[in-house]
Length: 211
Image (tube, rainbow, N blue to C red; front, side, top):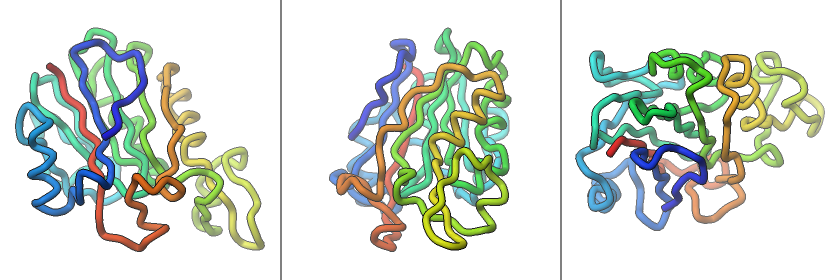
């Protein structure tokens, strides 16, 4: 498992599973994960949108979740899309978002910050393992929804998308200036499941909670 390298308060815990722990879409993997958690995590049905589950409105279908509760892990599943962790300076609220290109375009990161109900300048973020800009090939439909500085020509009609760069830009515009992480590539690193590389249905989990 991977723990974020970010200056979150000591009461904030977060981790991303790797393939060694198993498939988090299946019960065997989730059983292995439970040994590392304070309680059963909230599992979401993710649809590449911008809905955010919270303690008052615990949505089953959402691509992000925030919580003010202690010992209540919130999680998203990934296999090339980017997990983004959030915490505030006082360790009063944490969140996690599932952000592929569709989620980014829909504003899932901004929606998660808003759902935390704390000023954006008090929020820090960490960008977890995702498909990297050297291999994330996209077509014309994706090119048209992102800033050109986050796209690199690859071959006619196809570009490479810097998912990390696009996420940083969106967070910066929303007032989140302290953003860490972004140093992994699920496609290139065998520790991770990758849908693009293997066409697998297996998933990792990214979890955050307050102690």
